[in-house]
Image (cartoon, rainbow, N blue to C red; front, side):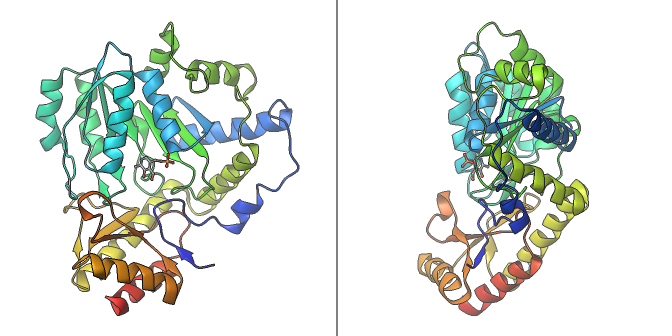
Length: 355
Ligand SMILES: Cc1ncc(COP(=O)(O)O)c(C=O)c1O
């Protein structure tokens, strides 16, 4: 055992794990219809989406589903990577449109002031970016950027995989047309499900297309089947869907989204305060700090290696290294999902002793 403080997969509460152990049902049964309709209805509410689907597969499958259905080869997309996951999103969107990337790195975040000129000059039909860049722990200001992009008539696609539900979000208020999160992140379920939200504009766009170049990820198939009997077009990971339902129950029991965002925000602020008091430099630029993961810079690669290894061997606490320019000397503490604040305290006490 031990304490896992990685930015996904996060620890799964026993109740959520056990929810998977039910007698198997088929996905063509009334029981499955009840389960899937409940998941999609609740997800629509949480996201503020017009339509929502749960697709069996990882977060990247969800992103590719959005790109495949919402981007066309004849269209151009503008992307704003500021780390590894932003690069992956750019690559994905670029498979289904002509994409251009404007890059920041090293913990810098995107706000409207920085993105505006690129949006203006792009004349693109699509904007796609990451809400929470997990590699450094940077929260991009997607609300103001997407609002501006929508005022220019663009369709907005956001990777919210490591942001939700620990970060403030609502598709309508944030002007987002396509959104994805992963089950192994803040919702605290096991890995293997992509949670998708779509605006009315996004639904209209893929519904009107003659040919979508995909089968499993084709949202027309998911929509058609859902409208028929609230089932999925192919066999889903039914056991995982039960776990997700339990994770939604726990989200609601814990006060819903506002309480969850606050719990994550408080843990993030506490983590930053402690690390700064210890003399560490944080990766995220001020005003771009993540609610779900904090990256910090060690004095050298040796310190990063030692702190990470000894936290695991002496305290049973697992944290992860950073990415990109801080690959060697950076560490990240995740405060994501159904964590207990005591775990974060123990982790920071450990770092303080080991540094
Ligand atoms: C922001 C972000 N995007 C995409 C991914 C990829 O998700 P998955 O590994 O579930 O495909 C991750 C995973 O850590 C992520 O943090």
